[in-house]
Image (cartoon, rainbow, N blue to C red; front, side, top):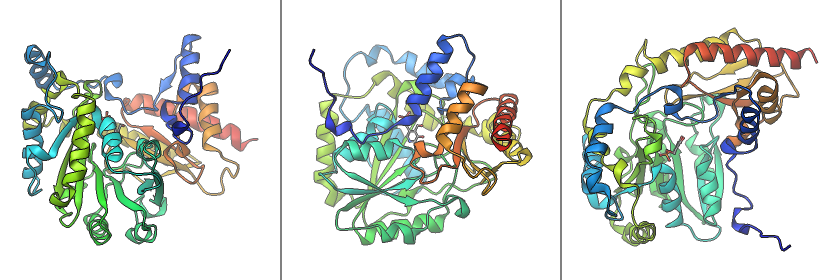
Length: 405
Ligand code: PLP
């Protein structure tokens, strides 16, 4: 029998959030175990609903969703993105500069594929949402990680970013609010990154999918309001703020110096045409989503479900002998670390596997997010406070067992 080998292009592509641990969890579920799976930020499985108005907008337009649409997406959806960007103070975006995709995920691949040649470098945060690193590698580039250190609240230091720029660097990726850390970057940091990108003629990819999921009055500054002298691509979508992961709708809008980027945008147009168009029914929910009542604030304000669950995480960490965390100020995660010196042999991957096997909880280890240290894990605040309190109890039991040898 001749072996069928996969593409060598996948050799250094990692996406562990749905990898070995998740497969083991599935096996255990098939064997009849109840697993508390907190590895994926998928609001729908935790009882969150997509706003009814969006569902109706999609249903009412199903008849007109039977055909392919324009490769960039349906006009009302693209116009709604234009309006949102305009209302935030982003200048010069028209529907021509907006592309709809099958989630931000597809667009991350497309915007990089259209840009990168072999060995081109892209500056990616560490830790990152690992699709960014994976998609750079998949598209023949090299992901160069800039540190977002816990001691700095996971905020990047623009000096670290600039020090990593070489003649091959093409772009800087910013994820704000951040997955996995929950950091919301200050205006000063974003300004400094914008100036670096302009000085070195780098494209800025700003992944803002959590843009309205904020706690404790954190201020979200859209990167596109700060980038003027180079190309800025802002990516967002319906999955998180609008709890519609399964609709598979995301978008990218281009601003800043668009004219010198026309060839790049033509390449993106070509790639968009190759996949004909993105999922049409879901696009019909975009105008209602962006233009309608923003129900996310009911979830993030004090007393709201996301706020309370985040509090349960902070309480769980405060009560623990082993854990520490920078309180997340945005998004739907906390990136929790083991206190220095308390468990010297701690390995995040081993911990995650032990937690799954012995305590039936699935969490994502920090190294799955390209963190350079093995001391962290990510938890989501999507479950109820009660579930989170239960999970922290199980985590503490496991860590106790490590401590007692
Ligand atoms: N970007 C970030 C930072 C994410 O956390 C996610 C999903 O978790 C995505 C992009 C992908 O989202 P989508 O469902 O739009 O593909």
